[in-house]
Length: 375
Image (cartoon, rainbow, N blue to C red; front, side, top):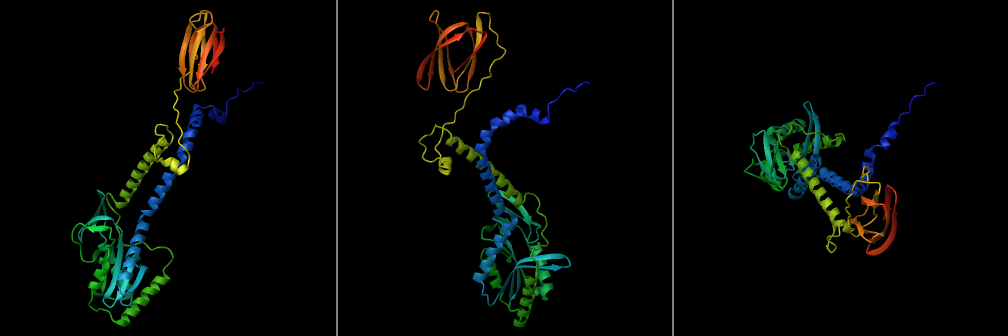
C-alpha cells in the first residue's frame, strides 16, 4: 500500500507566510494609530450628519418658524408648519403655511450659505461659498406648484395665494431677487407687505380647520417635496463631501504630527503637547534602529580564520584585543538589535565592552569556523 505524501494545510501555509510576520511587525503601529483613526471617523460622521440635507432643511425650517412666531401677530396670522398631503400627482410637502385676512402664504425654507445668484425663470440657481460654486434647482417653480396644490386642498383661488422662498440670513443675494425671495427677517417683511384684505373671517376659520385636519391626519413618515429637479453639475452635496475629505486629510496630518511630537525627545520643553494633554502621558523618545541583514553565505578566507557574528541588545562599543600580540584587531559600534558578521583569526581575545556608560572586559575564545557573541 502506497501512502500519499502529506501536504501542508492552508492554515499552516498561511501561518508560515512572510505576510504574517509583516502583520506582526505592524501591530504596534496599528495600536498607536487606531485611536486617531477612530477619532477622525467619528468627527467626519458627526460633520456629515450636521451638514446632511435633511438636517439643514430642518435647521432652516426652525429658523423661519421662530422668525414668523416672533415678528408676525399670531392673532392675525394662523401658522401651520410641516404641512403634507396627497394629490393625484403625488405627495406635497410645504414647510410653513400662514393663513391671514390678507391671503394664504406657502413658504419654503432654504438653507444655502454663501452668495445666491439666479433669475425668476432660470432652471437652476448658483451658490458661491468659500470660492466654490454649486448649482441647485430654482425653488420658485416647485413652490408655485405647491401653492396651487394647497389652493385646491382648501378651495381658494390663486389670487389669494402667495409663494414665498425664505433663505436663512447666512445667504446673500448677488443681485436683486423677486420680492417673494427673501432672506432672514425679510420673510416677515414680505408677508406684512401684503395688507389688502382678501379673505373673510369665516373663510379663515374654514381654511384653518381644513389645514389643521390635514396636519393631524398625516402619516408619521415625512413627505417628500414635489417639483424638485435633480441637481446638476457640482452640487452643494458634492462640495460638502469634498470638504469632508479635505477635513479628513488635514485631521490625519495633524494627528500624525501630534503623535510624532509626543514620541520625540527633540522638544522636551515644548509648552503644549496635544497628545500629552489628551492622554496625560509624558513624551517618550522614539528609537529608530537600522536593521542589518545577517550574512549566512560568508566563508572565511582560510582555515585559520572564522566568521564571528556579534549581536548587541543596546548601544554598544566593542574593542577586541589579541591576547597573543596585544594588538587591536576589531573596533566597532552597534545599535540596539543590530548584528554584524566579521572575519577573525581563530584565537583568544580580550573584549572591551562599553554599554550605557559602563565599561567591562570579557575574555573571548574563538576556535571554530563560526561563532556568536551576544552583548
